[in-house]
Image 1 (cartoon, rainbow, N blue to C red):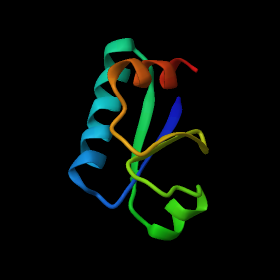
Image 2 (cartoon, rainbow, N blue to C red):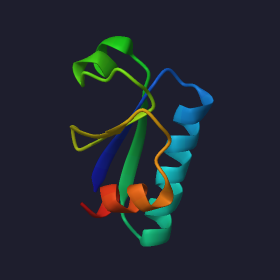
Image 3 (cartoon, one colour):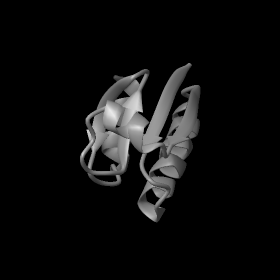
Length: 78
């Protein structure tokens, strides 16, 4: 199971990112746990300057926008 953290303040883009990742993972049959991280100290721990950002298993893989479906698939399969 992959642990996916969506880093952000809880804005609409962050919520959308979390929902889309969960939906794509479900369609692909990939077992994931999606967590929303809103704590500024935790977000800064990843050195994120622009949200939403995505970390998979503790590694930052995306930041600054809502990832499109192709990007989500790449992140999940990587």
